[in-house]
Amino acid sequence: RYWFIRGSGGGGRIEIVSPGYGGQKHAFRHAGKRGKRFQDMLQSLDASCFVEGTTWTITAQFRYFSLDNQGNIKFAACRKDNPKVTDSCPVFGMDFVKEGSTVSTGPMMNESPGDVKVGDWNEIRHAFTVTADMALRPEVWFYVNSVDPAFNYDIDDIKMVPT
Image 1 (cartoon, rainbow, N blue to C red):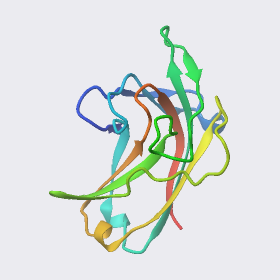
Image 2 (cartoon, one colour):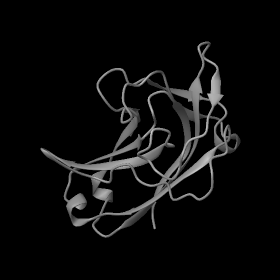
Image 3 (cartoon, rainbow, N blue to C red):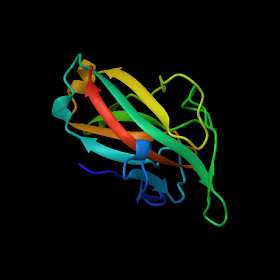
Image 4 (cartoon, rainbow, N blue to C red):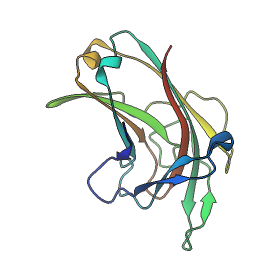
């Protein structure tokens, strides 16, 4: 499996940066300009893993920033309490797809408590349960969502585990 940018053109690019979260060697950076909030990193997952009634926990670490005219990072605050506001922090979403029909989680609420520490790594935490309608779909898209096009993010330590 691999990550790519959701959308058709104008969605920026994925870079590998160092250091990553907790001193790890690398992290992903969604760099460049995006035209829309949904043009973020996306990965296709094996649909057979998502059995009806199973509950999954998704966690990751992120940093949120903009770039000045010289390309320097300016770390910024973002809101964890509402993934639909302009200055929302990155969250994940999932689409369960069958030709002509999609069941979507939409942008999930970040369940990690506390405020964002500007310039530091911050947690994303979601939990969701697979419904019967989701389990019937042969294709699953897992993606970052809700980042305003004026901002970028680094993301690392992404995990999705059954609970």
